[in-house]
Length: 199
Figure 1 (cartoon, one colour):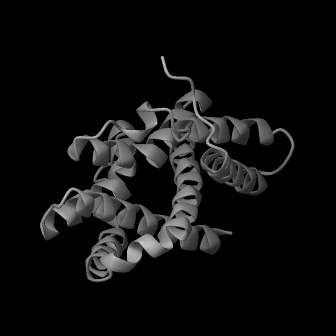
Figure 2 (cartoon, one colour):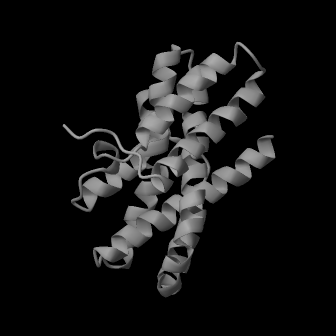
């Protein structure tokens, strides 16, 4: 399971990096700006989580695989930017998968730190969605999670389900089901245009 999750995390990182790069290119930023936005989108949530729990230096400083993957992804995105739109559905699916995985990674980090379940769920949501918040703020957009889109809500539901599922199955299966739930909620929300009410 560990190796499978590492592969999914890698794909999720690539998807988030491409998402950030594509958003930056739409705003007509230069190459350095595109790299910065992609980097923040991919590791922003995890960085905030690590700082909140006092895990410093933060994860991407301890393991340079992430920054290297992000850099390579951005270079490829710039070179093949004309073709990125053709893979929007695939990228969305990877983004949803990455959202589910990063939610559980953040949740597990909270558990490892000995925090209460509700705090762990919040950390999971931060890990999964706050890279996108930072991206949108830097690009002068209203962050996606503060609009009608079901994004952070999926993280909260999936994280809550994980702790409920622990009463019925072992932790590994609970993680798989929770990740699948986050992914499914995100995909269904977009597929059927499910939205939260606007105040």
